[in-house]
Length: 165
Ligand SMILES: CC(C)(COP(=O)(O)OP(=O)(O)OC[C@H]1O[C@@H](n2cnc3c(N)ncnc32)[C@H](O)[C@@H]1OP(=O)(O)O)[C@@H](O)C(=O)NCCC(=O)NCCS
Image 1 (cartoon, rainbow, N blue to C red):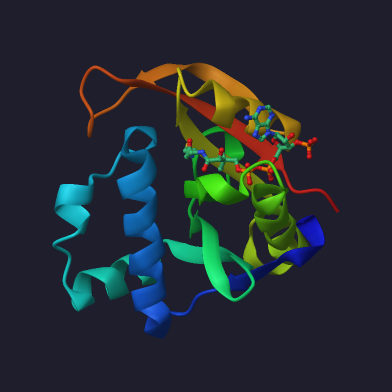
Image 2 (cartoon, rainbow, N blue to C red):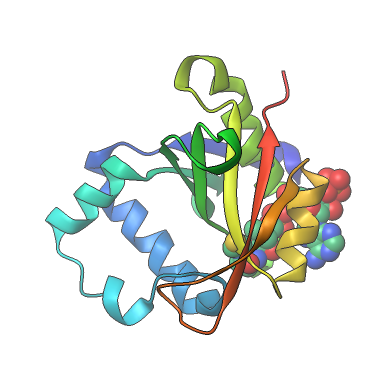
């Protein structure tokens, strides 16, 4: 199925697609994220547009339907990160078919011109499926687990990956 997965970077004007797939991710797997469905379901158009500018969404598409996403924010992050990845999610019906890998291939392809060469992310320490997937993609755990401010009581692990050329 890998070859059937297309990847598209959304512009701010495509905020409704961003909203719909993000809310689907929170509805399906809210436990995996720092955000909450209750809060984001109430976002206005202006709030989605602001989010779309700061955290650029890249979506995975199968047969014309958005089935997965990630966001990327340019910043100077921990462990030399030049960008921070968030909101990684693939619809359960399409998992383990290379959709996440394809999203990272898009990042790597554009890394030199977009400053996406050193990629960082945070993942809950008990999200073993995601950690396994990130390791397969070349991420390495860095530093000690950190306390979440958005979800008190939870801890996240930072991971870093260098874009492949
Ligand atoms: C984590 C997640 C995004 C992975 O997406 P995916 O499209 O299934 O991942 P891919 O198919 O591209 O797999 C990428 C690599 O991870 C491995 N992998 C993915 N899921 C795996 C699993 N359940 N067990 C073992 N390995 C797994 C794949 O084998 C692949 O490695 P390979 O190409 O060397 O074989 C998906 O499971 C998901 O949406 N989970 C719920 C939300 C979540 O936890 N997000 C992370 C928030 S930090």
